[in-house]
Length: 176
Image (cartoon, rainbow, N blue to C red):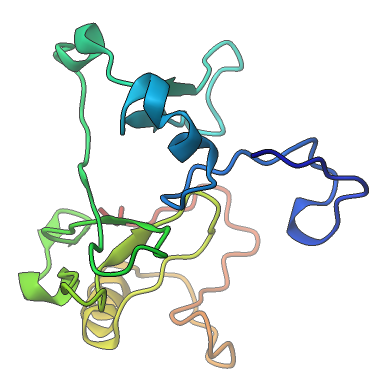
């Protein structure tokens, strides 16, 4: 099932199309299952990469690619109880800020059989959201590592928020 969009508005304004890869029965990925099975993968290059480097989208399993020594991947976990669920989830094992592995209980990230919890992976969302206990631990570690930039106190939804205007070589710890 495919549709045709005319005068796309909102989030997709100016887009020539949208390829649905969700787990729902009408998604492009689900419709290709009879040809390629239940597998697809994509690798998105850094948006600042050389323009000669391109991202990849693969339907089905590429046995040769799976043997590549530099291949890293994350398996997706699914919520099984709700057939209407179309999201993909990842199982987070740990979070790091800089080189520090944070002490967040592993069960914080678990997806229950009823579909509660878990961490959705969404390549179209800019911000990351974490449950409150994990967020507080991540925020504290980040604030402890970031020095020399003034905190902006009156920006409640994106805390911590720093004033980095005029900073040429911004140095922030990696979140991983």
